Length: 298
Image 1 (cartoon, rainbow, N blue to C red):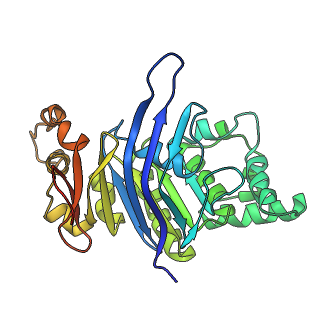
Image 2: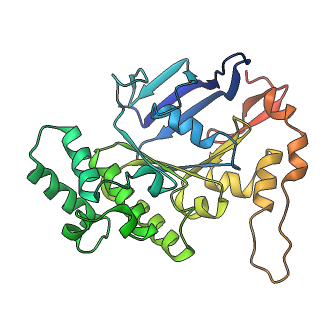
């Protein structure tokens, strides 16, 4: 049995527009997601984090084209498509856009349960109530009858986590799951994801622009910039021995909380995009790799 849950080689995502050249957004990235770990994918908005994850989940826009050389899930070759659904689920950044405002919470949860197998509505509701209780929602029976707008942001995000877990995934992708929440609720949601990951023995991909979040959550980190993974390694390797210029710039941008501190700008790095476009990943250790311009990896 392999210790790697997800293996993807040369993942590319392009967008096709009528009467315009095809635009490549993700430039042939390789992904390895270990079993039972939380992996952070970090980068600014527009770096390709979410598009890559939507490609894995087969929820890209219609004009998007996804290609890859190899796609293994738990060591088994898979074909990304509706006929080959992965045992994976995704938590989105904004629950209000992911939940149908005209449907009750119960409708959303029951639909997920019944999609997994033919069970009665009563059995599905019981499973939904149990999952709501697991994610820390009080009065779960009452919540089934409520609509998304009747719940707080933190509670809606817990609903999204419950929906994801009802799909019985082996891989959970959390795409900026705390961006729209205040600091206190952020901490609660992250603590819940960490707890559920251990309890359910899940592999988790945590997508974020915030290095502070991955520091306390992840065993390993992948840094994305301009549709490429520019550096990857254990959390200690990335924080204490960063090698790529962009990784170093991101780390400098973490606020220290010192009085009078000026915010650091990443603007200077954006002029050096050729380093990303023409680089190759070089092994520094068994776990630490960095994108280097003009390098070869013999």
